[in-house]
Each structure stands twice: as structure tokens, then as C-alpha cells.
Image (cartoon, rainbow, N blue to C red; front, side):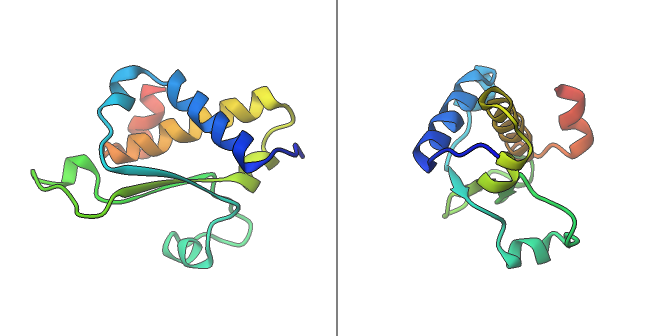
Length: 122
């Protein structure tokens, strides 16, 4: 497994955001992008994950398509999970692509897209 600091990981997150199509990133408002080592037990329970399932990223909030013109008071959250992402990559380049892919996926949820539509747009 790769060994990188949280600062280096944040730099890869920034590179991932910069590499995404501009219209998808520039229209994001009131969203915190966070880094955690692993999903919390509460997050795993909420998502009904089995012990053998992993989670690379998570969008928590109200998707734009469901806001009906209202803006939430608190920011939405996109959390990337460092250890599962590191486990999927053998090289720094692979890790950067995993981060980019995960960001795109979670940003898709922010826009209200389901998994099928996210994969179609990739």
C-alpha cells in the first residue's frame, strides 16, 4: 500500500477537482470536501454496508434536484476515505485516478444523479 501524508492526499484531491470538467466543479456551492481514514460505524450502518464492503467516498446532503429552490443552512459534505482508496491503488497515478473517479461520482450525487446515470456520463 502507498504511504502518503494527509497533505499529499489533499493535493491529489485538488488535482482531481482541477481535472474534472469545469462546469461540474464551478457550479458546486456550499459543499465541504473532507478526508477521513475510514467510514464511521454510523455511516456504514446508514448505508447498510456488509463487513466485506468498502466505501471510497460519500455524499451527504440534499441533492440539487431535490432542493426545490431552498438552500440548506449547513454545507453538504463529500468525504473521501483515504485507506480504502489507498488499498485500490498500487501507484500514485492509480491513486490520483481513483480519487478523481470518486470525486466525480460523489459530485454526481450532489447534482442528484443516480449510479446508473453517473456511469453513463463517465
